[in-house]
Amino acid sequence: MLKIVNLTKEFEIPGGRILAVRNLNLSVEQGQFFVLLGPSGCGKSSLLRCIAGLESIDEGDIYLGDRLLSSGEKRVFVDPEDRELAMVFQSYAVWPHMTVFENIAFPLTEAKTRSCSSDQVAKRVKDIMDLVRLTGFERYKTATLSGGQQQRVALARALIREPKLLLMDEPLSNLDAKLREEMRDEIKELTQRLGVTTLHVTHDQTEAMALADVLAVMSNGQILQIGDPETLYRKPSNRIVAEFLGRTNWVAGTMEADSTSVTEIGRMQSSVFAKFEIGSRVSVGFRPEWIGLRDEGESGPDRFPGIIQARTFLGDSVVYWVSVGQKRLMVKSTASNFSSTSPVTVTIPLERCVVFRDTE
Image (cartoon, rainbow, N blue to C red; front, top):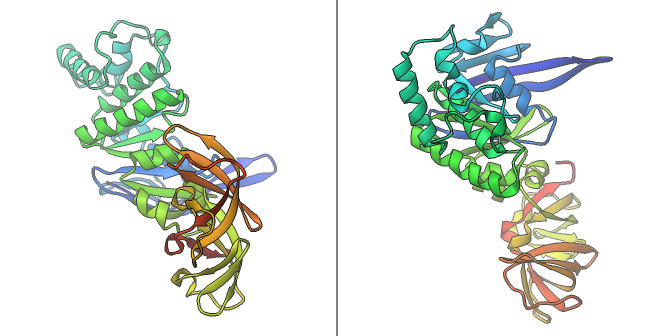
């Protein structure tokens, strides 16, 4: 559905230029919910605006199906309204002086694209309002609506065009936590039901993991890794991806013989170290929820003595901060029977650890 080839986008800034997107390649298949995840300033929104036609590109090509939308070298640029796509913005971008009905109907009634009779418009608006749970709000001015309702209006206005591609630029970031979770589930269900191909941009890793069929992590204008959320979470390609997809404990180590690393918390011996040369400096990463806590005294290759320094009860889990060797590890556990200052044995599943050279 969407193909991006060697795309580069620069912006002029006082004193020079900034490279927002760097030689980027990307493909989104028909019907996929594709999520771009990255920190502010990584280039993800700039990429989305280039696809939408809100920004020109300096190099590369953007295709929607077989149709070339933008090309730096070929000097091709299709106007945004002619790209057969729709975009939902972070700031809602609904017209406060219009009613909900008028906002949603606008793509069908705007003079340049008008193609429906008034009866057809009314039916299509009613159908889409039913889908996004706005029935009964037709005559309300959007300025009187809550943030979640305004975002539903924006989503309905985008979907009523029946776009080939739906672009979403951090549409949930202005909502409170509970509403954000509800809207996230609604967007996933709605796009699946309609079968609309979606490219969604966010900096929220929980949102990205919950929504994505395919997830791409961006940094510094480039895509670092693409895959399904579980693969990226369990097998990140580098430390940046690992850290952006959730909390990770890192311990530094130096490689010895026999797949052994001497680390800040003790010796670790596992096949995960087999590819590293003796003397290599490495970082070993493992998620807080992968760690187990046992009573003091057990020993083994994946067990390390520690002392609980602090604990936080979260309802469905407890977060412990455990001093192990020279490190303070975060442990997320369903076990609530350990108290502060308790001596414990920490178990780390070494085969699940990720290991990178310190330069990676």
